[in-house]
Image (cartoon, rainbow, N blue to C red; front, side, top):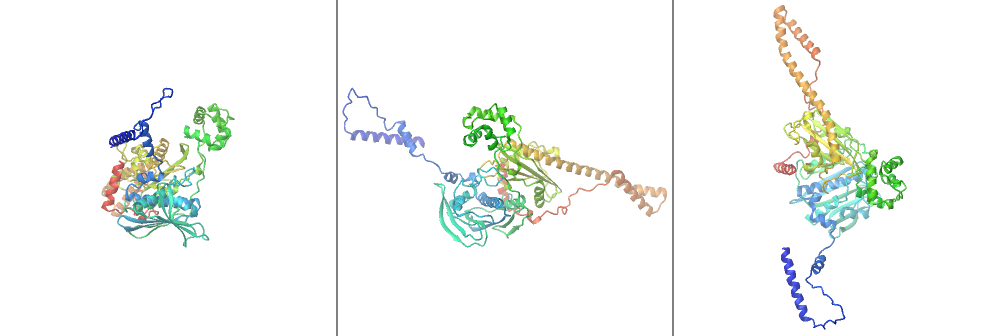
Length: 601
């Protein structure tokens, strides 16, 4: 097609040239003392380049994602519903925690037509000031979180505005937002769309309303979607959100079924993450040069101390000594080669790990408590790793394992993935968690595994990454990128939890073997007692005493053994109704899950 267009263009240009030659008057011959003037023919390559340049223009980020919405998690109707709710709930949780408010979030899904749903998310957060409402909900890449180095759910300022854009693309209806910042202030009401050509808010309606809440935000979106149950459903997301956020109360109204209230398990608010500066370890050369160009520090030593975390006076001197740079060197005089020297100096210097107050892991106790509420197992263990660094970004890995109980022993292990307390339900096969699990030798923990495949057994593995910047594989935030530092920490956490599991599995095997040996001996005790009665001609009562003495002697010699058989009533924290949320599937749900898992494998 391109060749045909060029040919037509050449023929058209040639005809225009011939016509202009006929119409133009005959020019006087060029005088000998004047330089020859060369005219550029209209069909030259320069002319084509100018013509092509006319069709080139800047692309709005909204236009780009309008055509590539699959990058944001809107590639099918089922995921579109989940992504919309996930982005809105994440924003609500971040806002409540930043304002030191115990979150109460209402999630409603109403079917309004054939594959058309109305999604309503309401929170009790601090609210949003009037001027910011259109920008937050109707402008992509607008937010306050991108430049902050601290643990938070949102990152790029894309999610909720992308949901508004998807809604207007599929239903043509604007998003309806109401927000209130104080009981004495009015509630501001907006109906918004996105002008994708300019990536600016298109305000359909701007008004004030009465609202019963003292403060909070409510968003209503009509979109084309599909509601299903199963492992990758909205129900599953709501359930896992309650597991990993025990301080949250969630009121959930699915389109099918009764309203569910998931009451918070604790009144204790999570500690607030503190914003930090980047850590020297892992900072790349280009980023270092950029930091040097924008720093307000005058000298290189001042730059190291003020623009990085964990670099004091002594550490800065050691870095500069290893870099062979003078401490009073002006930052504006640092060349690329000198910056490379500084990078080498950082690598040679032993520095403290980043401060832990920038990330807030859930903690071993709360992680284990959350998994006990959902899974009725016979053994639990959890591990929280100390913070590590990738590309200068601190992160911490937490792992919990639930073994045995009601879980199937003939299927691949169940994996639950979380990033900054947000469930990850899609693209497990593309996630760093998958690689860390398959690279672990589960056989050494008494679990079946073939090669580097997923192990099989009655196990659920929970992996949580808490980071100031989670490296997702795409803007949809469905899988964690395969950074070697992250995979290493995940494997170390899994191995530590695996060793605790191995102790239990081996103990259970020893008890089973011991009980088997005892059963052999106990089989012969009645026969021995009967033979002694015949030899000594004792009474039946004496025979029973002999049996009791032999049994007691067996206990003394072999020791007392407690049975490790699964007791379904032992776990008092297990909530059967809660565990069933999202698990009831119909045939269509099963096929969808199998298709997704097949793609990931």
